[in-house]
Length: 584
Ligand code: DGT
Ligand code: CA
Ligand code: CA
Ligand code: ZN
Image (cartoon, rainbow, N blue to C red; front, side, top):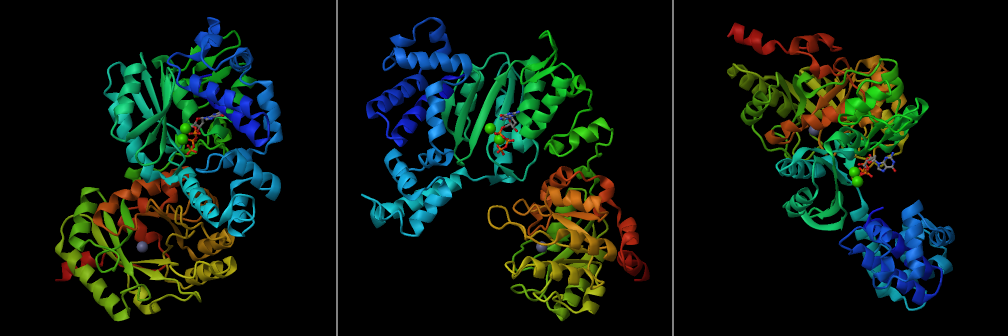
């Protein structure tokens, strides 16, 4: 147990005493002891071994005995007894700025508030205001603080954390005696949202690493430090955990801190059944002999499994699949040959010309690009006449180009509230590629949303449903629509589903990707770029697809243009440009 952990338990005892109306002097003594331990320059366990605990200010016999119990067993009885009396949600209330034990226990005892959500409600419905010494002003301040707390506590989309994490890791790699530095945790698993950043370093000494970490420009302040680990609050508001391990444990530690927790637990159980012990320090046999731990492969090999890609480590059947030799060969970014949802400056919310888009797409090695601007119901969207003219302009522009990518004429057509499409069918039929998306009336009942999608798919002109789940991370959850029904119709009509790679959409999500694959419905990974610089976002979609167990064969735009054309449900003319060129 680190000093910070001990300090936290002592401080919690003080909170619990105050919440339960216990002795105020006693509570103060615990709080002071917590502060002393927290700021101690040496490990408290060392002082304890040397019998020097009671020499510390504020630590008498009684608290010293508790610390001893804590260090020995990881807990102590008085703490457990107090915890049993207070709902965990009440303890959490104390983390909100301006809420002390008095307010929290008033709300709990008088209003039966046992969690944050209930406190928000009590503040809004006026019941909080009626409590003694409360009043409208205090309640308003508490409400504000509650909102800030929930925002801080909230998860951030992957892209907000990824660059920061990688840049800190890069800095740590340059520190002397560092052998390796990797980003672990949910970022390494490419989860769409991130709770905190986890960094792991293999090094022979920790001090220099911790110093470099503290001095990283992204770091605001260290909130906890120990001999081989520390936690920082970053300027972005995120938290980052850093751990330093000896090189021979790096693989085991990387595995452990990559998670997920569910995956780790399953793997450890499997190891136990084979008489092995897995920990962040390595793989050990019954006699405690170390069998490995320098690489992640060691860990999996010890339990008789092949290495499992981090994106699959969610405790969702990956161990069974590995056991039976049916782990998917996950799709990779380089497998994707074209981008089938791209906006040019003809969309009012997009900014790049065809020229700029082609240049960047060519640089990224894309072989084809479908220009899919908005239809007329969106602000300044294109009507039938404008769309025809636009398609012609795209073809003309494509004709003048010799090099990749090939341009496809396309559209992102709105699926209107009644399920009809926002442009006449003959206009849509004249295009190379039709994305159909819902951009309005999100709050209609789920059944209605399902019907809209089904109607669009049955139009006979739609190639793919754009961002089918409708979610926007941190803003709007996916519709509660009937996905099974959508899959059934998609398969029958041979309509693909999009994995929209915009970092704030990532829609379909991993679970829906997997369901689609299992239902035999094709997927398309698209950037939905609104600027040339966003064409590089494809990787986010690929990560989501990998988390959804997708392989190359599950994704239509891993095909070359000719193969793609041949797979579609109505004849297409991707080759027109070539033929036109020949006839010119
Ligand atoms: P996050 O931060 O909420 O996005 O998700 P993670 O997965 O990064 O979780 P985090 O930061 O709490 O912990 C990092 C990894 O450490 C986690 O994925 C697995 C491992 N870990 C943490 N706590 C436990 C635990 O109690 N048991 C086990 N088996 N593993 C744990
Ligand atoms: Ca984390
Ligand atoms: Ca963490
Ligand atoms: Zn779009």
